[in-house]
Structure formats: structure tokens, C-alpha cells
Length: 216
Image (tube, rainbow, N blue to C red):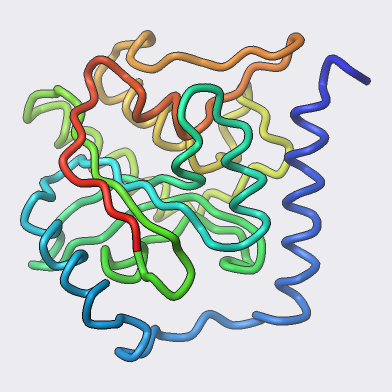
């Protein structure tokens, strides 16, 4: 039991969140313009020009579930969720895997940059860039778009060994690994025999450059 406490805790978090989703948020709704206060919108807009294809966008939710997820970070507990950004038809989107009340059907999502970092539900966000070449980014886009097309579901078991379901950091971790052919691009957290990738495994990285870090 002790050796897998991390997994049990993560599953408990998602089960609580899933129950809330069925009661409170059965259908995702468009975000109203009022959800972006002027000061927050200025921060969001000022970081947007820094985006480029393949950027990692992270956020810190303002709910209890996000607070609990951030505690699983060993080095830096700033962020609780992450995704990969691409510009498609002059719009920036963030591909990300999420479960719970924010995504009742648990399928991998593609949200606009603005909606991903929305201050209504987040304490802040960050944008990071990994040192990669153009061919890797092209392959990365193909990989995440294929995952999105396949509607890959969220991994409630947080099982790093399986590929049919992916949690947020796992999706980023495996997509970059596959695109680059580099299995050591990110570190993995090991606790009492349980291997998992947390958000700080993604951005606390010698190859990751911080482009923007915002608190609302």
C-alpha cells in the first residue's frame, strides 16, 4: 500500500473531480469576454507574441484539485497542468489531456491559448520552450494532432507504462520523446517504486527556456 500512495492519491483526486463534473458541469460552455479582466488580458496578450510552435504552456488552477496536483511536483510546485501550443489558421491552440469537471468526456482537448490560461479558473500561467529543431516540431504537431483525432482519453490510473490513455504531463512527455527520438529529454519522478511524470519534470529541465511566467 505504501509503495503506491502517489497513484492512489492521484486517482482519488480525479474521482472527486469527476463526481463534481457530473453534478456541476455537464457541458463545456464558451468563455465570456467578461472572464478576462483588463489587467489579466494585458498579461495574456503580452505573452502571446512569445509563442511559437511546440511551446509548452503551463497553468496553475485556483481550485482544490489543482492545489493537490501541484503538491506532486518535487522541485517547483508552481504549475498543476500543461499542454503543447501550435498555431493553426492564425489561431493559437493548446493541446492538453485533462479529466474531471473541466472535461467530463475525458477526451484530449484543443483549446485556444486564451481559454487555456483564463484567469477565471487559474492563478497564473507560464510558457516554456524546449531546444528542438524544425523537423522535430513538425513531427510533434503530427503526433499531438493524431492523439486529438483519436480522442485519446485521460489516464485515471496515471500509468506511465500504458499508451492508450494519457494524463497531461504524460502526453507532453511521450509526444516530445517520440518526436525527438530522445528518451532522456525529461526526467521521471520515482517515489517508493511508483514512476510518474509531474509538471515540474517538464519545465524544470536544462533544455527548457522560460519565455513568460505570469501571476494574476
